[in-house]
Image (cartoon, rainbow, N blue to C red; front, top):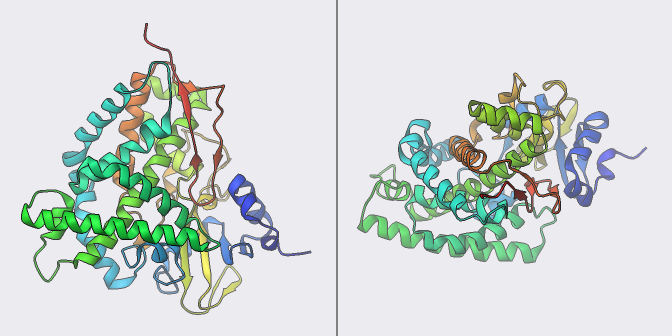
Amino acid sequence: MPKVGTTVTLEALEEDPYRVYDLLRRHEPISRIEAIGMWYVVNYDDVQAILLDDSNFVVGTPGSLLYDTFGGHMLTVDGALHTTYRNSFRGAFAVGNLRWSMEAWVRASVEGLIDSFPDGGVELRGAFARVLPIQSILRLFGLSESTASDLRTWYDGFEAALANFTWDQSVRDAAHDYAAAFRGRIQEEIEHARARPSDSLLSVVANTSEPERLSDEEIQRNASIIFFGGISTVEALILNSVYALCTHPAEMARVIADPSLLPAVIEETIRWRSPVQTATRHVTREVKINGVTFAPGDTVNCIIAAANRDPAVFESPDRFCLGRPNAKRHLGFASGPHFCLGSHLARLQARVALEGLLGRLENLHLDPTRPAVIRGHEFHQPHALHIAWDASQ
C-alpha cells in the first residue's frame, strides 16, 4: 500500500484541507507530502514539540517562502537576532498599549465602514474585512491612508507567494517586485519620521537610539511581515467568525443576548477554522519525532489547523462550540519563540468588528442566494462572504 502522503494533491488540500488532515491523522500523522516536497505534521503534541524546539527546527533558511518573499525578518531568523527584531516592535503590541492607542480608533473605523454599507446586504470581505486591518495597520505605523490601495495590490501578491509551494517563478517575480515597492515606500516614511518624529510605531523604531536602532533595511523587512500578518490574519478571523455564527444560529442567539461571549467566539473560531493553517520549520540536524526521523535540510510543515482539531485534545473537534472549556489551547497563533506578535491586536479588531456588526445589523445572516465557500490550505477563509440583514424601514 502506498504511503498516504504520496496520494495527497494540492487540489485536495485547496478544496478541503480538513478532510486531508483527518486522513493523515488516522493513517500517517507525520507524512511526506510528495506534491509539495515537505513533511506534514498533524497531531497536537508533535506540532507543539516542533514549534517549541528552535534548535532542531528553525525558520531562517533560503528554502522558506517567507524568506524568499521578504528576506530576513523576525519570522525568518532565530536566536539573538530574532529577539532583537521582535523587541524593537513588541511594545506597541502590548495589551495595555493597544487599549490606549488603538481600541477607540478601531471602534470608530468599524462604525464608519458599517455606515457605508448599502441597505440590506453587502459582500463583507471587500467592504469590511480586508479594509479594517489595512486601516488599522496604517494607523499603528503612522502611514497615510493613501497607501491603502497599493497595499491591497501588494498584499494579494504576497498571499500568492506564501502559498506558492510549487515555487512558480512568475508568482515569485511578482512578489519580489511588490516587496521592493513596499520597502521603497517604507523608506520614504522612515525619512519623514526622522524629520518629524511622532508617537507612531514606525517613528519610534526609526528614532531609537544607537546601538539598539535597527538599520533602515531591517526596519523595512520587519515592517513587511508585520503588515502582511496584520492584514491576512485579521481579515480571515473576521470572515470566519461571522461565518461560524451565521451557520450556528443557536450560538448566534447566545452571543446577541450576551455580547460578553465574543472573546469565546474568537478563540473557538481560531481553533475551528484556523485563519493561518501552517507554520513551516526547517531541520538543522537529524532528529526524531514520534518515531519518524527528519534529516538536515528537510522542510516540516506544522499543520496548526490540524492540531487544533486533534480529538486527543479537543472533544468533538469538528464542532463549533462556544462552551468548549479548553478552546484557548489552540495553536492558531503558533507557539514558542515565534508566537504571533500581533495576536492581541488581531483579537481586538475581531472583537470590535463583531460588536459592531452584530449590534448594528439586525437579523444578520448569510445571503442564501450567494453561498459562501471556504477554501485554502495555507490561508483559510471565504473568498467572498455575502451577508444580509433586515433593512431599515
